[in-house]
Length: 147
Image 1 (tube, one colour):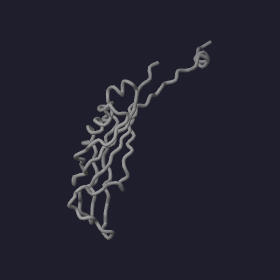
Image 2 (spheres, rainbow, N blue to C red; image 1 turned 45 degrees about the horizontal axis):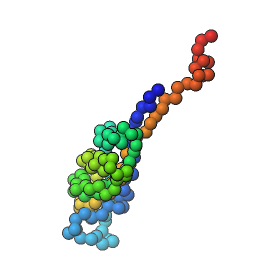
Image 3 (cartoon, one colour; image 1 turned 90 degrees about the vertical axis):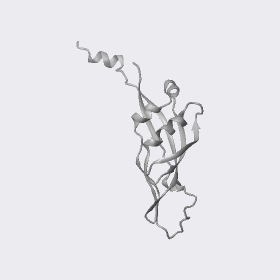
Image 4 (cartoon, rainbow, N blue to C red; image 1 turned 60 degrees about the horizontal axis):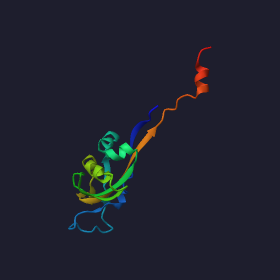
């Protein structure tokens, strides 16, 4: 029996605490400022991931990882994303992740209640899971046959 492939995405998203102010002219907040870091509002789902999964990697049944750094705009959209890591190299996982950037939406970073741009690092693990349907053993099959 042929195994069925199920796409699975593990979003190992960077801690919101790693988000940094992305605007060079933004004042560095002092400790008395109230800061709310960006947080995820929406993420790509499994069908979206499978649509961009690198063909060659999918055909070989292999997974991979990619990490991109992006600006978080005041709207919560990601912009100016660049791949900073990809493994294994040469299979297109970085390019696949970049094509998903428009599906991410965040709440913007707030300083004293005012939205400011920020940076975020987004690591993604692309993974194909193979699920086998175990056929009954010959003895189990015989015990189900009528006498």
